[in-house]
Amino acid sequence: MYYALAWKPKPHTQAGTRPFSMHERSGASVLMACMAVLSLVEAVPVHLPLAYKWSSTAAWVATGLSLWGAVRMTAMSRAFRLRPTLVDPDGLVVRNGLLFRLSIPADSIRSIGIGADVPAGGQIIPKDTPAEVRIRFNQPLEAQLLLGFTKRIHVIGLSADDAAGFARALNDLAFRK
Image 1 (cartoon, rainbow, N blue to C red):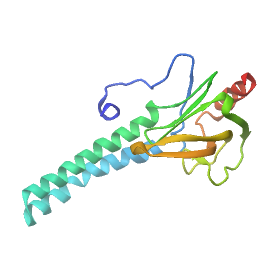
Image 2 (tube, one colour; image 1 turned 135 degrees about the vertical axis):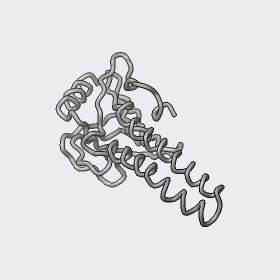
Image 3 (cartoon, helix red, strand yellow; image 1 turned 60 degrees about the vertical axis):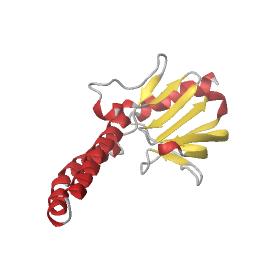
């Protein structure tokens, strides 16, 4: 509810970290916002026939589900902006809204490649974007997914909105290692 209803929230960052957004080029935030609007728009055309043909209870249940869906999609859309990927001297935390979170300690990074493909078993964040940076790990790390699911990955491909600044931050991290 925080992401859907908070008034003028600030992105979730910590002192000493450099935040990088990863949602603008993928369009994920805009897609979720459009789905929220469509959920509200479809509420009336669904409510009226249900109330006329079946029962007002079914109509109100369907309307409630449409409203809940709009709130959830609004939260998903805003979370992309409010939960940026963070780089600090100890490593990085890759976040993709509420969908994905992976903490990568600097000492678990085997290699950082620029503009490389991500092999099977890897993850690209955000999905359906070309990976500009590839990070291989010494051992598989566990990513947190939506609804408490997890996924073990050994390589991740990232596409930051500020690709040059992100590459510089990762380069600084690699030299500190």
